[in-house]
Image 1 (cartoon, rainbow, N blue to C red):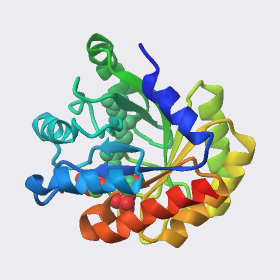
Image 2 (image 1 turned 45 degrees about the horizontal axis):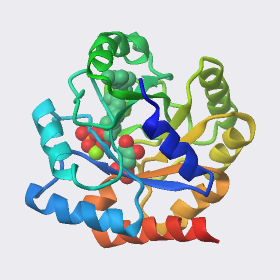
Image 3 (image 1 turned 90 degrees about the horizontal axis):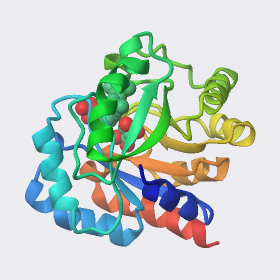
Length: 248
Ligand SMILES: CC(C)=CCC/C(C)=C/CC/C(C)=C/CC/C(C)=C/COP(=O)(O)OP(=O)(O)O
Ligand SMILES: O=P(O)(O)OC[C@@H](O)CO
Ligand SMILES: [Mg+2]
């Protein structure tokens, strides 16, 4: 399997942190406006689209969104909540294992079921340890996460090291969609210092200040989801602030 998207992320990351825009196919209020919204996010400097959601997402809705985004020249990466969200229209898939789940299905079950189809379709995989921190939201509930407290940095680092030692390349620190607070910068900086992983941070990031604090702490990729739907102008400001931070 090619490593095109992985190399794209690695190369861009050498110049600083990136922003990924999460598009939830079930939450997009107006599909007719998705193309123009997505173009604005792209022009502001977002580096990829993550497409996924926990509730109510079907393969049809996923394909529809991938189709609409197809002309925009940044990667479209599936962010799967389950095995139904696999599409050859995507450039890559976050091959997630929810490491702090009590349910083996989310640790290794779904992955085993999905692997042959992903192989057959030739979709690039981004091997990702997924950790649910602090709040958890819908993903934490559905994924039966044994949530890592916001302040337990040593526990998060231990999971991060385990992910690295098992050969994973990415670590997604997830506070949960709509979390009242994001993952703390101290947790990110500890993991950045001691683990050799591309760190993705998401959940509850709604301001430029919080995004930049996480970037300064060492996050490689900042994900925003809800704010794109709720307040696109604010999302664009966050993207621009991350892009400007890369230039200084
Ligand atoms: C590798 C494959 C094919 C599947 C792995 C599936 C795993 C391990 C999933 C982890 C558990 C889980 C439920 C993750 C959800 C990730 C996600 C898409 C989060 C964003 O969606 P939310 O914002 O939480 O969803 P809603 O907006 O529907 O509430
Ligand atoms: O919707 P928000 O709170 O930005 O969260 C994004 C993402 O981390 C959810 O999986
Ligand atoms: Mg959501």
